Length: 498
Image (cartoon, rainbow, N blue to C red; front, side):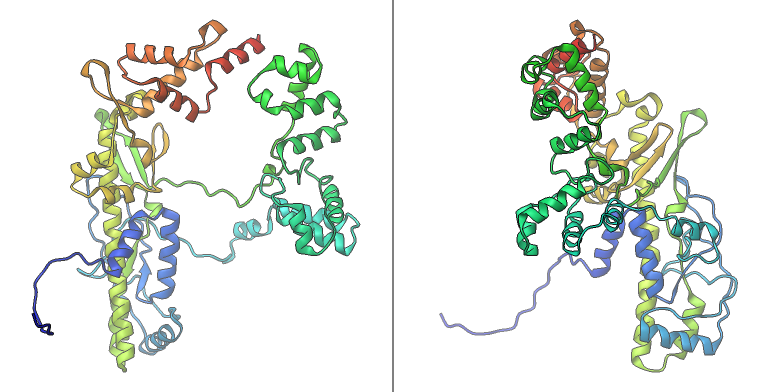
């Protein structure tokens, strides 16, 4: 059979993920902090985007906010021409004179009143911002470097100290190998060990230790309480973790009273001396959705307008600069900016509506939890919510990632409401895994005496009597996940307390 080249036409269907669709997917799973950073970058890059500075009422389910009207914007022709050149050359908007507010886009993305406008960076005469910048709290590394400066070290010792401090983690522990440091710096191991000894005398006491035992030892030495019995106790910390008091007494050579005193002294120490300094300040979590109880036991779901950006496409400004564009390159640049701005406004609109729709369905499914507590948390998965609102599971998964709901019972991540189902006895309604964990904790918290301690098998029996069909290994897994000791260790703890 002869081989030859020929042309053929074939018709087919396929799914093509465009760059804009990929970006829309990323927008959907962004947290409110990530979204704010993204929008700020787009505002700097695109001169046709502008914030809507007007105040609006928060969006509430299922009502939809009408598109807002905007006043006409006057732009000086000379300024518009200069701004176009600056944006084209530098990739950022220049200064332009504006009136009261820009006009929103039409079908290509009008104003959607999802949130109030954010505030730009810089001090701008704000004394609170200036005070916050000046009141910088030192971290652990800076605190240690300050002590090195007044420790009277030689230049070589100070250099070794600087390298060692860079290897200290937030808890205050040294995370490096001394032999490797000596080889890297081309110095003797004795110099590194000598400098480490100096660092271990710095504040906070116990810093630069290489393990928990050394950290506790440094603190005991500082209190002049490190003796052979304490050394033996530190050498047998695993026995202490297992609450094996008989073995600890033999190892330390002390009686019951002395051992209790030694353990009490250990509990007064700090296993993470650097934790008081911490690292970067923790960012407070802002809810994406508010749930409030209304009359008649109904739940009202509304978006947090402070976390969602509200943008406008500046149509007036676009008309001016597009009319002043002369070259094909300038016209292409203006057209691209317009397309990107319109797409972003529409994508933010769709993102907000999707979050509202998903959270409203979650509240509808978990109204028992909101009304009566965690024991009434229903089993729920992504497919159930996706089928109810007519979306794909992957969309629901992205919406619930890094999103938080503020309810009368507290602030919860959306993922909290999705729990696996545990079968009920005699074919009853399934139980949520979270509610079962809550019941296990309640049973263990009620233990007041040694005789009251429940083994995992006994917990299984109690739960089955309550209608929960659960295996012993599942009870053990839930108990360990909640950091609850075994029944043997709990009996020892109760015996010691007596």
